[in-house]
Image (cartoon, rainbow, N blue to C red; front, side):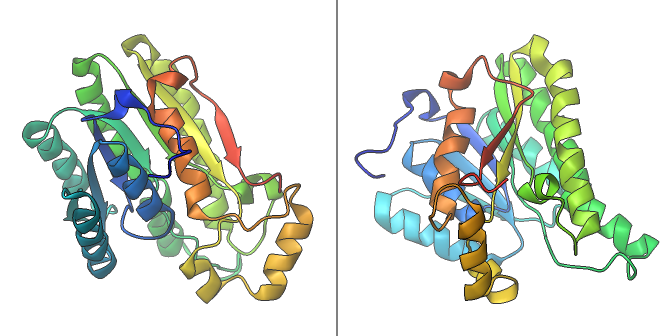
Amino acid sequence: MKQDSAHYTGLEQRVVFITGGGSGIGASLTRAFHLQGARVVFVDINDDASEALVEELRAETGEAPRYHHCDIRDVASLQQVISETGQNIGPIYALVNNAANDDRHSWRDVDVAYWDERMSLNLRPMFFAAQAAAEQMVKAGGGSIINFGSVSVQMALGGLPAYVTAKAAAHGLTRSLARELGEHNIRVNTLVPGSVITERQLEKWISPEDEVAIQQRQCLKMRLEPQHVAPVVLFLASAESQAITAQELAVDAGWA
């Protein structure tokens, strides 16, 4: 952890569960919570990247986060990993619903099967992960759930209508769960990342010309990277955000 990074002592030894924690933004989240001293458990389907991250952190710190291969579209498997985490490691204190897939698609080409599959990946797991983790948080006296939205909603971006719909719904889920779970001292918020430059984005969607155009739109003329998102998620998981719930917090360099 950088010397100038905030350290939240309240996260030490807390159990943190992250979906899609093996690469991209998720890997940055796994690293950040691990370096805070949290007991991190993450799921992913990219075994190579996830196992490499585990070994990298083990070599760096002498300890390692716990990785489980899990396709989050399989709700039973996802909830089983969450249940086993509570039984074997301790009650989940922070749930980070990060995993998603933003593959581009034309509205003309979307059929019912594709629509349902996109929802089964980009929206449904958020609720069922929260359902399972919240039971542990209730018994433990509180916790924090952080759902990932997307700047694509605020920007009214085209070319991915199912994804944008799912991400818009994520904040509706946040608002509803915040009302339901607030009486149990559980906070629920939406983190809205902007155009975060990851290897996947560079490989599939963002050209050098696109990046120039994005920075022209941003208030801050910077390359937005995963390490800019992680500190805000740490804050939302920490006790320092104890009075913040049902909110959307953007990390987009002022793009939207």
